[in-house]
Length: 318
Ligand code: UDP
Ligand code: MG
Image (cartoon, rainbow, N blue to C red; front, side, top):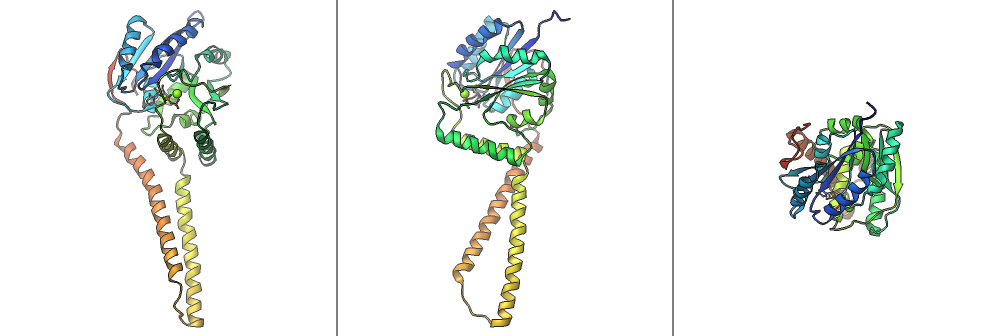
């Protein structure tokens, strides 16, 4: 029984990575061959518009370790990771970016830590943000502060999606079939004992980042909405506060009228109050709208991704 080598599945979400993928393949296989394991590389082509699919196909033709799933269109990295988790057969499973920003050289160490048996997952964390713009780093830090303060997601600053997990944890993640996915939160939410491995940021080897600044902002907001009801509490809080203030003002105005008559004054202040309250109402409606929107998408129960082509035969469906 002990003779059997462990199977390690590496999930590689790829969107327009024709340049990076061959380099990734070369470097990662080098590391894996040096380890005493069986392995599979699960390339998830997330509806790429370049030759990523052809590259994956070529790799699969010459190497049996390579499996691929190709989506019918771009569904996003979250969907690509989920497809990977659903189809990975490994005892140990990890997600790795195709741009080598998740150094494969860490794999032997991660594997060794899991083999000791004390931990269920080994996660990686960038301790530097070298090569990233100052503004982006600032907002990233702010996001981690906020989400940890107001949700039970437990997201570590600088945490990558790159983590090697035991089967049990992967099954737990697959069992969370929600449509609006925020994996950084899900990893923390499912629990399990996690070892954090710090490393220095690496810049991508080829191609360019798929994330625009606004893309990241939207991702951050949906992360917060997915894991916290705090914004709803804020909205209700505003409502209660406004009710109390308006009640006090009402009493004040009535008393003043009874005591001093009705000197007309204060058009400007009246307008200010109207606009202020109008603004807050719209803000709160917007917050509620965000949650209703998410609920709407969730109730539709659409699949997270649609597979156009794949060389995986026996699927472990969600
Ligand atoms: N990715 C994906 N689908 C997308 C966007 C990105 O599968 O819609 C993949 C991408 O190919 C890469 C990984 O997700 O392997 C991380 O993307 P990227 O390197 O652009 O993000 P960054 O490292 O800049 O945050
Ligand atoms: Mg990257």
